[in-house]
Length: 141
Image (cartoon, rainbow, N blue to C red; front, side, top):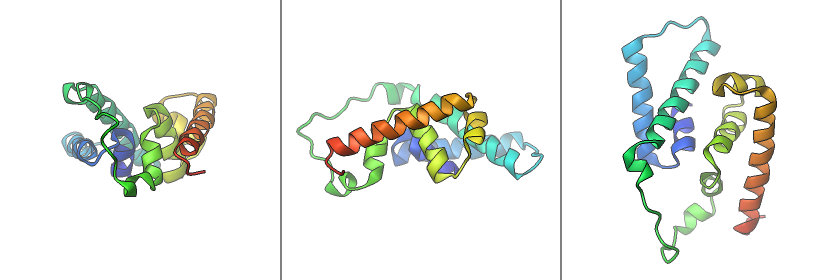
């Protein structure tokens, strides 16, 4: 779950590996005690989101240049839904991932991301709409 969420946030394997490692480093360092499995899951989700945000602010991430349009992406990646998910803004990516891939309720997502339930519903709606636009633009729909 931690790795999938880190990958959804970071959008590439190497950065997701860094986040994954940092989350478990913090787990080992702090040795938190959990009231129940839900509390443990919420802790891992919150720490993963926080580590992802921290990583995204780093110099190496913010100073990366995009390749120009002449670079052709792999056709295998274009056919995958993950290609479209990578184009979504981070806030939409997080709610979609937690809702569909982690089977979390809107209430649980709101707690994990420290948002209101109505805000989570709005972000889910906007994320679905944006994902549909991306897929139509790429001619998948």
